[in-house]
Amino acid sequence: MTIRHVVMWRLKGETAAEKAVHAQSVRDALLPLVGRLPQIVSMTLHDSVVDESRNADLVLFSEFASLDDLQAYQVHPDHVAAAAIIRDATTDRVVGDWLV
Image 1 (cartoon, rainbow, N blue to C red):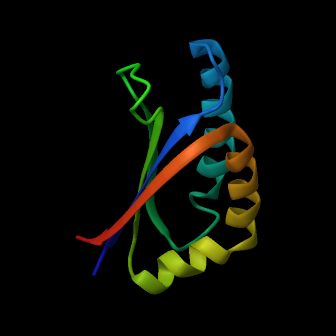
Image 2: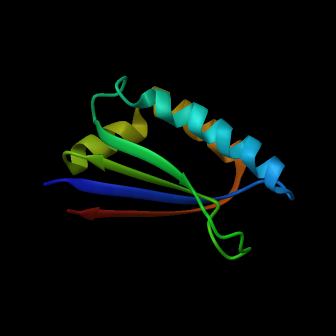
């Protein structure tokens, strides 16, 4: 049973350049976890191509082998530290988790 975990964020900043700085800080916080945390099967981050105030600016797609692995990832100290950085870079988030 594979779990797909998707997170969508709105980034802080008024300009595209400000948002790009915050997007990079999210990438710098999360992408090093791939390979370091064995629970992560895959993880990619994508910028929105539509600049619409109602849309998310940055989307994370990740997969975990089980719900237990997702839960272990969420409480892992490295992820908790990354989440603190992400909270400083974002204004809003929406999360979805489902079986694939």
